[in-house]
Amino acid sequence: MVTIPALAQVAQVGLDLEGSFELAMRSLGLSPGAAHLLWLPLPMVLVLVAAVVGVLVNVWLERKISAAVQQRIGPEYAGALGVLQPLADGMKLLFKEDVIPARADGVLFTLGPVLVLVPVILSWLVVPFGQNLLISNVGIGIFLWIALSSIQPIGLLMSGYASNNKYSLLGGLRAAAQSISYEIPLALAVLAVVMMSNSLSTVDIVNQQSGAGILSWNIWRQPVGFVIFWICALAECERLPFDLPEAEEELVAGYQTEYSGMKFALFYLGSYINLVLSALLVSVLYLGGWGFPVPVEWLAGWLGQSVDAPLVQVITASVGIVMTVLKAYLLVFFAILLRWTVPRVRIDQLLDLGWKFLLPIALVNLLVTASLKLAFPMAFGG
Amino acid sequence: MTIASTTQLICFVVLAATLVLGSLGVVLLPNIVYSAFLLGGVFLSVAGLYLMLNASFVAAAQVLVYVGAVNVLILFAIMLVNKKENLEAIPGLALRRVLSGAVCAGLFALLIRVAFVTPWPLPGPEPVGEDATIRIGEHLFSDYLLPFELASVLLLIAMIGAIVLARRDVISSDIATGDPVDQGLIEKERTPLLLDRTPR
Image 1 (cartoon, chains in turn yellow, purple):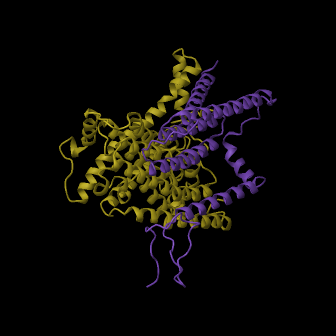
Image 2 (cartoon, helix red, strand yellow; image 1 turned 45 degrees about the vertical axis):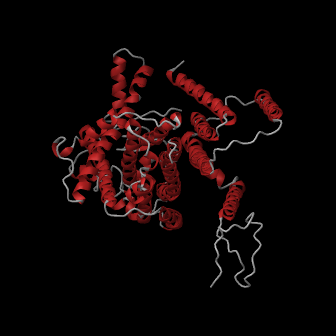
Image 3 (cartoon, one colour; image 1 turned 90 degrees about the horizontal axis):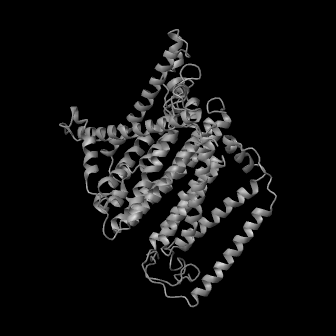
């Protein structure tokens, strides 16, 4: 039942962090069960820390790139190049008074942000940084992410309703409508990829793209799917062309209007973790995940090294992590550029785009992928 | 007792407790919004129970369909028509409550009896685990094909019905003759909200 986290079980032969950790704990006189229990939280905490640090980096990038786009300097005094600015932001939110409006519904008001944040963090369960570098290689992999992200609208509706404010309620309803509308083309785009790799597991999806380096990445076989997925991911994250739920001119700050302090910080954290997560998943689904543009096995072969040697294993794993993060942050960069390039769409345009354009295109893409898979099983995964 | 089975037991007790208390709350709470949110919690704990039975695909589908679609739509419906009004007292409310309570208790007793009388083959078949996705797919497209297709037809009918009910900009007069069209079937009464689409 409880799947065994196997983060950093880098290789079957070379490095086995879980095994050596449990061995060390057992040599301290603990039972195997207790040693395993001590191991269990470690990968989860590591990924949680990685997600939060990713948010800090993201906030800093957002400020710096936005400033560069507008020919400003951006944060400058907090640390070198303003790298400590996100920390300062976080501290400010932490020390702010936690206000619950007088006529608001206290319980739902508190539960809302939690319900928005928790599914996003849970989804990090399936993000792979290497062959065995993920918390759990569950068989339903990418489907788990789709299912979990469908919980978010409930949190949004909850906070919108509980705030007892018309702008909040409208913002919450809009956010939920947007989230539901864009989930469908998103799932269809994912389905086309899944069809090609014959598996829902994120690790299998990346492995299926690892044949010939950059040439075998899914983006060449699924260009339409890639664009659909990216648009829908931006809409799910409420990034700027689609940030209607909090359109300032119309809705003040949408469902976040009444929130301050740590509860607002949860929304803030949730949206940025979601952005990084979406970028990571785009890189997993379409950009070869942890794969280097030239397969690492070829490089090791040219250098006359065995792929199974421990040192090569460590280097491969590091390259994998760096490549995953690099691709993800490249996509985040594009998202920030888009933010300052494209104007916000109107709510009816948003729904039209989702239902009348993206959904049919995604269906056609799925159909074409299926027929291509039947016609050319070599190239499209038989 | 190993750590794994203890964890399993604790998870089961917690999930079962949330399930029972949550569903009682759904039925008994006077505030309909609370009921709807609690229903989401109930669906989630059912998904947790599926997960404990090694049916991860069914669990994820449960979350996606029931929490992500059904419950969100229920909430939408409640929030779009949420009018704070005091409903007038129904005559004989106490008697109605007693009656429905008795019916529910009878059903519950029946289910309990079924659960205890049926000779369950224990232990059940080996869980297939991660292969379940493939198995479900095979069944859906072979021996369960007809129910599967019928379900999709049902969904199509529901969708068309929803569109007919929600559509407001119906043409109020016949284009060819100019006579007013009887829309009693679609609209309860003709309101001035209807768009005048007569060609000029």
